[in-house]
Every structure is written in structure tokens, then in C-alpha cells.
Image (tube, rainbow, N blue to C red; front, top):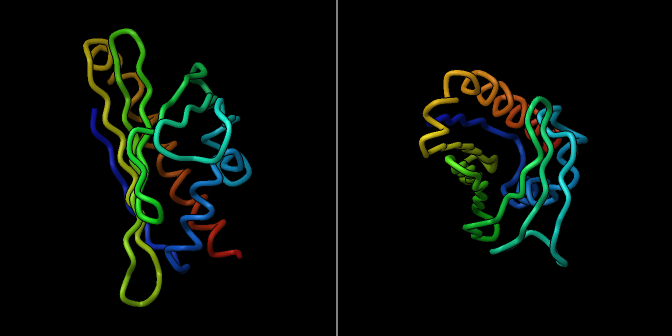
Length: 140
């Protein structure tokens, strides 16, 4: 399963990045997240582990696999039969705003079996995340 969406935000990339990396606060601005908690000391960075609870999905331990400060981060969830990779990328726009690209990729035998059940839910959650991030950043 591969899903992606992008959204333009009328805020500088630095401002969007600060909202994006404060992951424990995501439940304040997107209903696609119930709870995010750091399992390691320090902020978000390479190797960080987080427990994420989303509505209608079991809790999972996600690990940051790529982190380019101010530009992007990715995290992955590994479970028996499936791996989920979620990417969050920022692009500066010429007008001073930011384009955000969100991408989710699932692989593995279990992912192929369950994809028909979860693709629509994943699309809805991704749209909620994008719209919530836009609203949060533009209200500051």
C-alpha cells in the first residue's frame, strides 16, 4: 500500500517544522492521533522511539529512521508480517509558505492481506493530519 498527500501551508518552513516535531502535541490538532509518547529521553531525532495510539488501530512502537532537521523525518512500525513507513517532508515555497508532503508505505505479507481493510482509513487519517497541521500552523 502506498498513500501520499500534500498540502500548502501559509507559514514559514521553520514554523511548520516546530509544530511537526512536537509530536506529543499532535492529538491537540489532529483527531487521527489519540496519544503519542516518547519512550526515550530527549526530543525527536534519529533512533527515537515513540508509542503511538490511533483510533481504531492498536498501539504501536514507532522508530525514527530518517531525520533531517528542518526538512523531513520518517518513522517506521515493524510488526509480524508488516512494516509501515511514514514520511513527513517540508519544501519551502517561493512565497515564504511551505508545502508538506506526507507519505505512507506498507510492505509485507500481512500488509498485502489487510490493505483492502485499512487503505481508506489510512487515507482519512492522512488527510486529517495534513488539514490539522495546516490549521494549527496558520492560526499561530
